[in-house]
Image 1 (spheres, rainbow, N blue to C red):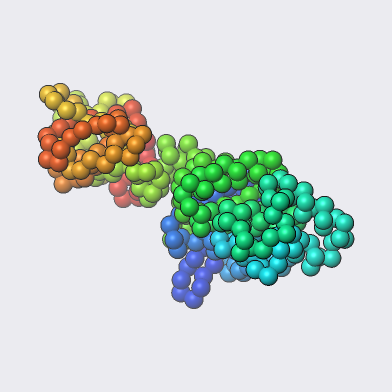
Image 2: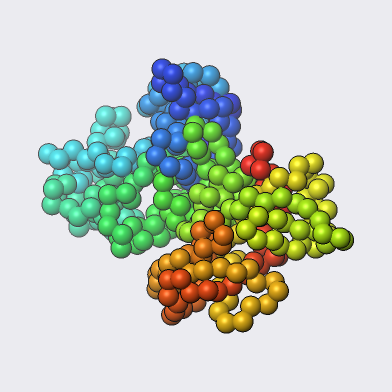
Length: 364
């Protein structure tokens, strides 16, 4: 097995910068997701690692080997595509055996490897079938099996679950994670689905406009987003963001968002001032850290209005109109309210995020 290292890698297509000075260290045997919206550069990054695209500049290492000038075949990686790319005229066995056949692996060894991979994936009874006779989940397993038989140093997976229905995707997420842990192969997984990334990965590389925004573990990414873009992308619903100014009223520090004001303790205010000379800030609050208050309001509750209520089973998403802002709060299941009802909103001050408005970077 092997680590994967990208050092200041750049890739452009004409005037379009697809990968912009990306540096990533992926540890041996780890599972790392490349996450971001369409067009952010994640698939191009994967193709650069595979050798299917050539970097304009920068270095790519697999283990200790610089692979910039190596062909895809010589990099000892295996790629699973979104479309699975199975040969329709071949049986499952022949599809899985194909990469071994072109490498002239002895027949007995080929049969053993294919049967071992099929057993691991639970498709040993499908080896004589053609792809058209398989379900989407079975085709995906065949594509994975074709990668496994090569005994690669690195698995490269390009949105392999996107063609499956929602229920099967949930099942296959767990299966893929179990498989990666069993094989212990370094795995790089491209997805635009943050739930896939958060549930499966050891670390997540969040990308936007070809740039690496943050590389961190799932919990760190959710709890400490590096900037407002990550904060607004990660989470369902994502973090609420409010422009505000750090001011004071007497000895009390205030976050003034024009439509509402929040009192903060002196230690929190000092932590902000230490990290930024600017008073122009952005206040971030996850929906679960914004409570809806019905009935009589206290002095710490901010007047709000019910904009819409969205039951989602395990909780209720409540859209609140706070001045000119529409903020999302997560309420318990069964929460009832009508559009236009007057309520209060309370921030969980211990979980607030403060960003510098000019740089968009997290301060505290």
